[in-house]
Length: 213
Image (cartoon, rainbow, N blue to C red):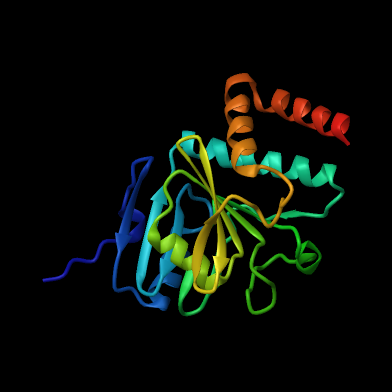
């Protein structure tokens, strides 16, 4: 006898996640509808497997700080950007994913006016940022969606993953910031923000950029 449990009845403790297998794309779409927009979970779907993750509060802070750093550097370089946060990106019927946060930079001009993300109309984000645990399902979904660069921040270290054909290759160089030592710089600034305060770190970063320019 099979038992059907409403998705809303599944409670995840912060920092945990569950994997559900053998789901159709329509199942995934139905679960998204049932979960609703106002939730503290992230989802990733790839070819029948759905991961639902409930991040810790401590997990949320690093990616927000990294997003602030990215904006500060881009602004100092006079570059346009659009922050699409944890928007749900779908590649029917293969993959769906919600980044911790993501940016359009090279393609910023192409998403002006976008209020409903549709990858048949708009390009994928140029940069996705994930903090702490990123599942195989998540990375496979990013590959299917063709996100060119994914940063993963974990244990005070930043890994840059560059899309190459159908896989991600770890790299010491960022496509977004090719002239910056991102893998060293970002962890240092995140730790400084946590220890001394984000606003203070950003003010000092902007001052250093101005002095160096």
